[in-house]
Image (cartoon, rainbow, N blue to C red; front, side, top):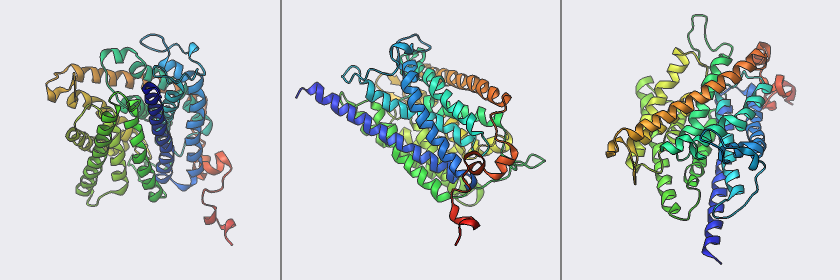
Length: 419
């Protein structure tokens, strides 16, 4: 058998394997969001996370992939020649393989928004903006960096999506949660934030652990294959990814222990995710030691951002998605310009000067502006149309019952279901 054919087969399998792990992350996101919120909205959260993938898969196949990777200009690909895909599987063009891998990334970006807007969003509105993210918000931003667009020409580096997936999703989450408004009862009349505890920390913890496993597909499989040096890069990425997560978890545990007198469980779980998000952009170009620093800084930023957004900005984010994905994604994007140490890509601490750092900062700003402006327009239209938010009585009763006709996700606890 020809070695080129073998390499193509191995590369295809590697991308499909990684894609399956990233798809499994939808399970993790569902469990984290459900566990960190109230039981009366569990069914609604399940439906939203399924919507992200089922809508995203169809829409991204029809047009999203073409907008992201089709031949066009520096701003957007021209999708019409790439709609519905041709599925050529060769060394030069593994369309079906790449389509599947990129589809699960697209669904992840949409899912991030769900957590920040949980427990009070109208399901119809969720379907609309989830589709919009897969249709053009994510693909256009992805084209700028991964599709040969203007940021890639400047040398902007985002290996696996700190910016394109996480920061983009975190920005949309912040804009959406701001326009949507807080949950009923979140703030007192004098503006003090009240804690609304999630109903099942075990489900949330299992979700985080599943996401951690999934990240070993998210980052290492972003090599695009194992041939042509891909094995060496993937092996390094496994290590930098894991070290950043562990460093962030340890930092968060001790930070909350010192600040609040007890090591906080939910914050430590979010710390793991913050470290993973932060290292996603630089994981292939930084040393293991640098990945630890990236995880530590990401954890501190997250620990400071969550209470600041909650109590000072008064933006109600039930799962901390804005801080974990938006803030840590931004830090991970910038950290490339500080710690990169791979070939000609040298960050500030390795004698590369300010050029790469400037490019990373410019790219981060451009992506934030893109997501914030388009997101604000989209959410404002939905709010103006009266579609964005569930009615107060529906929110109080729980979206399971009012949106989906589900009395409870846990019927054994309802009197009518007991023997």
